[in-house]
Image 1 (cartoon, rainbow, N blue to C red):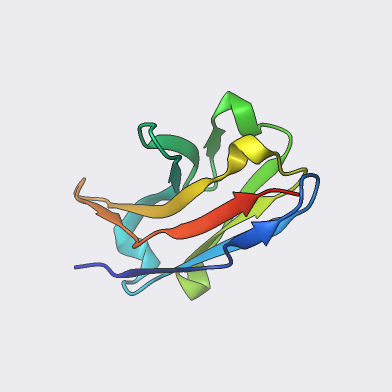
Image 2 (cartoon, one colour; image 1 turned 90 degrees about the vertical axis):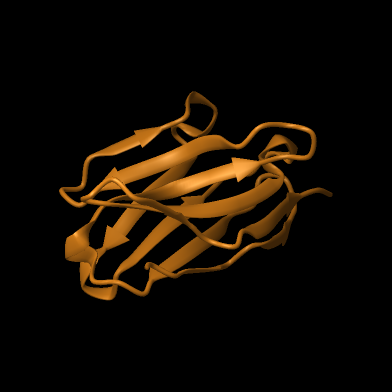
Length: 116
């Protein structure tokens, strides 16, 4: 079992920044991939960004150049730095972790609202 605890969501004006954090309860050595998904009202959950244990990253086109994912393996934590936020970034953001065995885990979600 892996527990993922997210923090850092909230309300921000367009153009602002937020940083999401997700701490995993399990040693990062057993986790192959960590990342973030989001789900806006009435839409399907979509991948935002993922990072491997080796540091390779992948982003959805909509956030490239604005969001940065990083990982601190010593702290079993993944971060999502979100800059130049837009109203369309409004969603519930879910932390994601996939063990080396392929088993996926999800956090409880944190709300991000971008509005003036």
